[in-house]
Image (spheres, one colour):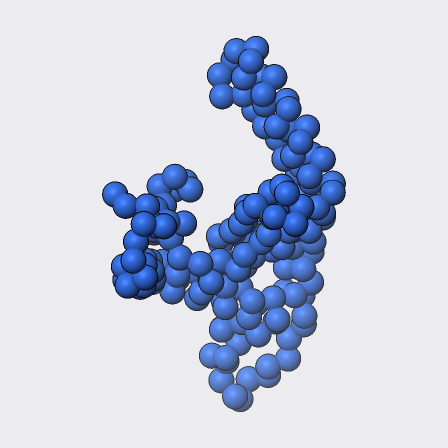
Length: 167
């Protein structure tokens, strides 16, 4: 299999178009769930539109308060990153401790908690959350950002990042 950087511009366009088409059914569902949950959050659920005009449409705004309470509780204090050794050896544990120490420092310096909170909020609405980890040349280190899951595409059968080619 060719690496993405080895492809011609035409092949890259075909690859991206193919990825978009293959995963369109999954993302139609994600988009529909997001819109439905957002409508409930705005206190304008679909079932209210089906009420006949003769009946009263008076309703209280308890749904919004309940959903906002859940969202606030979910995003209030996200867990800090944790690294665990791949196997029980002393070397693996030492490497995991170093990685965790570095990630905790980055967590505090980069204000990663805010990105985690945004990702958890989109996870609540869309049932999928996406965090983009990338190399920031200005910091000369990695950085994390929350991405709207409706704006990305990857294989609908992928369960891990390694299952998705060209993610």
